Length: 252
Length: 252
DNA sequence: ATGAATTTGTACGTATGTATA
DNA sequence: TTATACATACGTACAAATTCA
Picture (tube, chains in turn yellow, cyan, green, brown):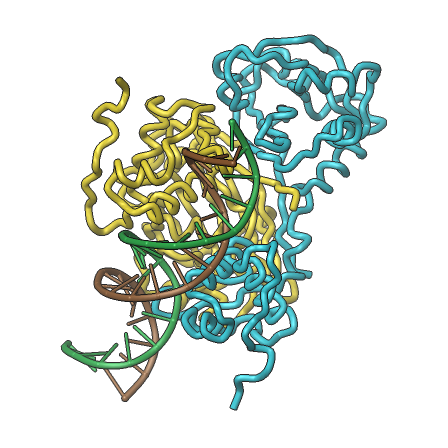
């Protein structure tokens, strides 16, 4: 016999959408090898009944995991486990504007520091602006909704003219640059994105639960408006031991 | 009055899903500025009625365009046009199939090791195949044409049936997967690409002129054929101190 | 400040199409 | 051919966020 207790009607906390809770549940079952890599999940209809939700909800949950490349589905066959991630936060796709929107919506960015700064030296070089230019600086940890530990530390340098966009916000759940576009009329024409390996600096390491000098990954983005003006410069720090930047190239 | 002729009940060809036809239709209306950048689309319910489909189908269509970053939606507000398709068609530079071709053409890959291997453990997991599956393994340094020092070490695990593709090649100046497609008829349908920070293992570090344990970056790619079959698995190692993985999302 | 109206998001149900084994 | 399982598509209802009178 094999239909054990793991597969039971879920009890749902309110506040988070069911399909996300289902997604997390499936994630767990995959992680602990209840559904191993290469095997097929039970059919959607069956999962729906087991979990006590509609098939529609199951499909939404599966769609989440498919986006992350963990599952693949084939008509007439089933839904296959493609990869194990000890932790679904350890993978991240943001190679399109849409990806950035989705990422922002699925996470919470808590502002811890906010101040005016003049950028100089290395920072100015990387930002591609002349030293001494003033920016509004924001920084703080980023969480997946409902989690206690941040998976990322996010810094942003914002054109001071756009400061009012975030003036009375403490927690952000949407992409900052879409707010900027909306409230300022300025349009982001180009986003330059870089991924680098680094040794984590001290405070960042602390926030991520790592030691200074540990392996880390940064993703920096330069949001350019018309006339190649830098509207926003963002740096995200991730721990390097379990974080992956993922892209899927499909051949339409 | 403003409900002109562009917005009419669509007639659907069979063979392609409706939501894709709706997505294409909306895309056209956005391209020809019927719905300008920065404006809101009509509400989903209204679109559904106009187009003669269900709201569900409209939402699927909108989801498509959101994935590409052309639209964004906010609860209680509406669906905003973020970009026109043309802007983002060329969004991958170092990051498309074409980008991979260019990369391969600009470099030389020298084969140093070639042997049959059975993949196990960690490697099998990362490849997403069952342990014990046999692959043809190729490895060696990659140079920019005319340079003396490699900037990258490249490993590849190839489906053994495709072994003949590289049987009498020592230096490769084209993308391996294009050879595979050409000589085998198999078509690469999807490429899953991951970027990670690592500590360089010994032999790799040596080839890159670094010390073991130094900062490094890996890029791994899984080339999937039809039926989600893994045709090729490639790992590239770069030094981490001066290497950046760059993407531009441009809107010219 | 409150409440109503609007709009997207979530969740349910049902039926039929289509690829696979 | 038949059964299975995902994909598409119709419908309904209510929740949650936002806007505005």
